[in-house]
Image (cartoon, rainbow, N blue to C red; front, side, top):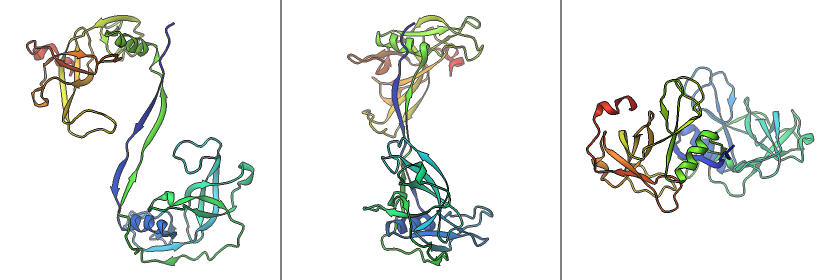
Length: 315
């Protein structure tokens, strides 16, 4: 049995959003070591504050200041922190109802071990040394042996100097991808400048990249078939936004390409032609870079365009 490939992959998509008056005041308050909540229509104090009432959906604006200490309502131990989490050493995820609040805030608790954590224990905010107006301005919570403070929230205007008005939220997923035997054979063939698909024994369609089973018939596809290397552009899009860590100038064209002999279009970048001259039916061929394990892009072959009827079922 041939070796199955594995590879570490990262999916990352940071995005920036504008903040309304409630979240702006909350994050700016954290920068100033002040925790704000918002009073809901039924009188409850919601922390973190929401812009709309969680029950009635009415807009909320009445800000109040709550305490920086509180009570753990529930928790879970994290023995193996991951990259980007609040602490690098084992810690507890806790829901903390801050003094004066009626809802709980999720954050990390720095504790010696799971035996040191319990529901009902008192904790306090440990502020970050450098604060920028983000939830990470609360570095974590820590055990608090002091007396319970005043649980009555105090009204707050929400006004601070130099308020935070935008938030950049990083979204990232790190994982190990195993393509399976069929796609491992496909990738191994690409490294040899060959494109190999698999034929369904029932409907006789050839799938590239192979999936190990026919998506239509649901049966295994063990018969390998070499296709291409040339193909036809079935449809395409023009990319105008430059991707992070991708050394390709915009605009460029990304297309679905039906390789000769294949019954499923694959996607790849089109090069060697101005982006505004790419068209459906364009005949293309792969271009490998030196020591490349897969085609860098596809370029026009110079052949006449394919007739629409020859690829319309693959759009």
